[in-house]
Length: 90
Image 1 (tube, rainbow, N blue to C red):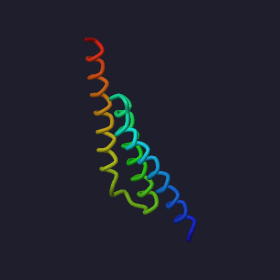
Image 2: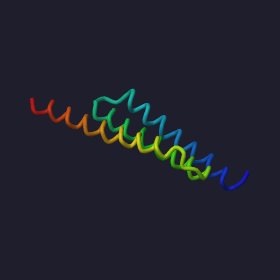
Image 3: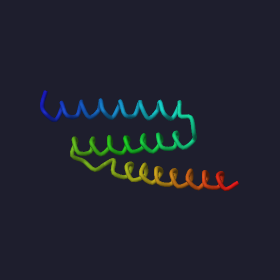
């Protein structure tokens, strides 16, 4: 195995463990804010995994997917924050 293959395998394992931990927190989270944070972490892991795949394979085909995922993460976080702010005010 080459160095790139070893690093790719280790990165994939770490991304997988992080994603499983985030999914566990989404399922098990006691509050909506814990679930929202875990969803943001899961989206960040997906974006990082796509970026690593692009760097390893030397292409930019999935850049648009990364941008759309980032947009969903920002919009989702803002909407949950606004929802929780309205809920706290009442």
